[in-house]
Image 1 (cartoon, rainbow, N blue to C red):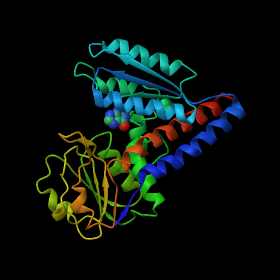
Image 2: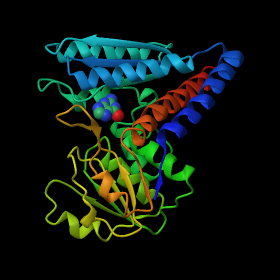
Image 3: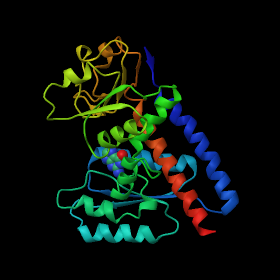
Image 4: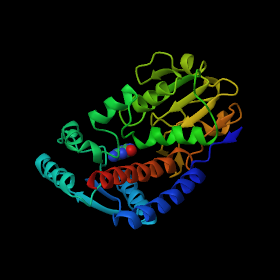
Length: 285
Ligand code: GUN
């Protein structure tokens, strides 16, 4: 069994981003800028946003976080997005999800200028991804593809089972795998017999948010396991969706939690923001 080390690859990508930021600055005087919208007091969301901000600082991006109370109005968030759309110092806009129940999330995501949609959640970019066209791809599944690529793992013709059908992870993960010529199945909360599907998988991509969802008897020998879950146990440990200790004995490759997919998500946010900044710089001249 070999670990897919996302922490190491993310560090390598950060070094490349640092150098490219310097180059962009020397050539154009411009620095990539990321605006983050954080609504409410959810500790997990606040922790993610804090990690994103620190990463921006490390690579020399300009970043601003708009922290808003949980009872903020729809129109106040919309106005902030419109302001960021028109702000030339901002290349990427990220709305940390989930948002409070009274907020229309879809309407906000649709308001983000697609060229600043570094999370790849605007229907324009979702459509481009499913059509196999160039665009912004959601950071977590993009990070998974980069990690597989680093270890020369080709998904072409492989039976890939995606567990979890969220717009943020499962659906774009499935699109990327399909675009790379994998055979793709998407399982979800209403799937009748999950084990029947996973046992047949060459690769399993699980992001369901359920501790120990994938157990050793659900995995065939030599399978590749990508654990996209992040859960906190009662005693405060960070774990994924896979029963790691037992499953790792059966598989050929597996991502650890933490240190697998998580750091890759942040690295891809940096990479997407740099890509947006380069495109904006090019459009200016
Ligand atoms: N909430 C959980 N994951 C994500 C993510 O990748 N981006 C945003 N904006 N919100 C999230």
